[in-house]
Amino acid sequence: MIETTSAAPAALPLKSRGEGGGRARTRSAGWTGALPLLVFAGLAFGVPAAALLGGAFTAGGAPSTANLAESLRGAYLTAMLSSVKLSAVVAVAGAVLGTFLAQAVVTSRLRALREAVLTASGVLANFGGVPLAFAWIATLGNSGVLTTRLGLGDLGWNLYSFWGLVLVYLYFSVPLMVLVIVPALDGLRPQWREAAQNNGATTWQFWRHVGIPVLTPSLLGGVVLLFGGAFAAYATAAAMVGTVVPLVTLQIADALAGNVLIGHENVALALSLDMIVVAGLVMAVYLPLQRRSARWLR
Amino acid sequence: MAALTPAVLPEAGVPAPRAGRSRRAAGAWRAVVLTVAALYFVTPLAASFVFTVNDPAKGFTLEAYGEIFTAEGFARSLLLSLGLAAATITVVLLLTLPAMLAVRLGAPRLRPVLEVLCTLPLVVPPITFVAGISTVLRWGPDYLAATPFYQTIIAVQNPSFPVVLVVAYAVLALPFVYRALDAGLGAMDVRTLVEAARNCGASWPVVLLRVIVPNLKTGLAGASFLTLALVLGEYTVARLLGFEPFSVWIVTISGANAPLSVAVSIFSLLLTWALLLILSTAGTRRSRS
Image (cartoon, rainbow over all chains, first blue to last red; front, side, top):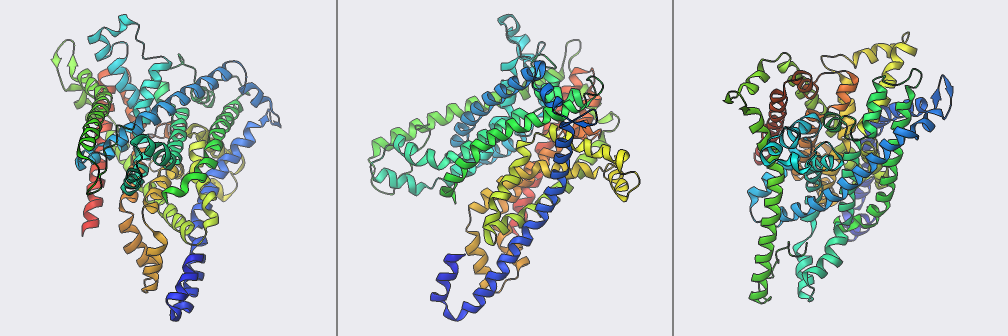
């Protein structure tokens, strides 16, 4: 705004009054444009959040922290730790693999390949839930096609385990990473590489000093997204492992469905609050870094 | 990583041997990466298909696929999902695009607010969101029975078109829509375009429809794709709130019939794929005219 208004009068002195009017209108349009979203989010998000908070701190009709204490003990704690570990492994592995795949696609000269991979990523990134579990069970489950044909069962293969879940979760995490990182890879201007090369930089030096720093916000954003996706996944895990691998989402669904002691329904809300806190901490690491380096891609 | 990148060469300059070697290395890397990816992503689909058509007793059969269409509730749940998707895409784009333009043009201080707002649905996993929503919906009979809010709460839960799901899905879609649009808006100089158009006398609707939207075609299409796929595949919210769109229906009918449940999974993937292709071709055609 400042740049425009200071440059415009010099170039077009006669238009300066019109410019001022335009600026005022732009600013008011700014606030009104954002208003509907803010109101919507306040209602659709704020009200359930308030209900969640209220419920989590209420036990037996009175304010209490008993629910939170219970949600951080025994089986609930085990489930939470297991969820965090699973999500972290999936997020890092998915981000690395997704970036490699995206780079392979972006640098390819085949326009059709790029379109196909991006469309496929759009589909597969959301191919979660029960169908994903069914597809993998048919492939590598105990009576799955590959398990029986290759005799994997005798080799000790078990899909219904921690690493089985990692393998399955990567199926939607890697495509999601591709979707996140492709715009950033596109944003790496060829001129930057040419400039680096003309100054005698090796390919490694280009990536170390230009490519990676510029991509960092998108990479971190991807890791956070992937963590969130794996952490929140419920249907896939429910259909695949049942209770073999303890996960916090499974515990919440159980508690919401009323499979807990009478009077302990609010434990589901307390567990939800725990989940939000964990995810919030991950986000808190990401936001400042993202803001610091996002300017390169503007 | 390094070898993945083909050398982008200036017109004249870099000696030919080095360029040729790095380009070949890049090609090899690309081939390896793409092959591994293709294997990983195609194998479960191919194996699932084999699983559904290979009956131990009868050999090759497509029975499992036939059963999908004759199963009760197929059309109803599918139409419900598509309706929810259309409503969600409309709502979320109408809310997000003006807000994002506003942040870039007139209210840059709102940017962190919007950023946090559009990342919150990722921080808040759907299952905790459901926990909150179901608590709110329980207020209806508990506290609000005598007030007009009660009717609203009943109305948004109408099983033939649950508005509460559109609201929930719009919230869940916010991060994806925000990211898609942000990438699109970042690729163009919004301020210069808008100010040029405004200086030429264009009104705001004209600026939006003839300057922003055509430039943002990819971003808008991406946002719509992601929202559509999200709504079609969403299971947790719909299931725990007790509604039956397509994603819940396929679980309900699959029951104990393993080939049928896998066939339905493949079918839902193909369906999503087809819809996305239709949407993307429609997007490009509109932009050409």
